[in-house]
Length: 100
Image: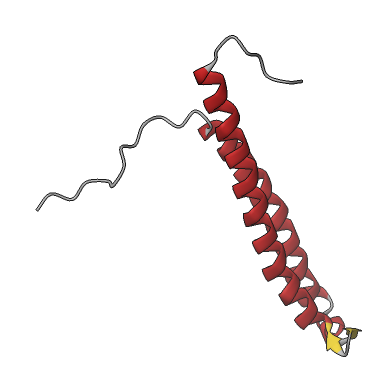
């Protein structure tokens, strides 16, 4: 039995855009996470401080890490889809130029 991709895979014209966007978003999230680690390392008692609705900083920051990751995923998906549609439109009508 031969296992092949379900759909044919070719060159992705939006690949470089996706890569740059992904790297930028990764760097942002890595810095956000590094600040969480730094607070734990440098000021461990601060994580026990109540900051929101009776929850301590560690809990609030932990939930923020999860929420920011989900928001970044949605933004990445939206922006990549938008770029793919834009490039597909340009491929179908090469006489058009990009905005900007």
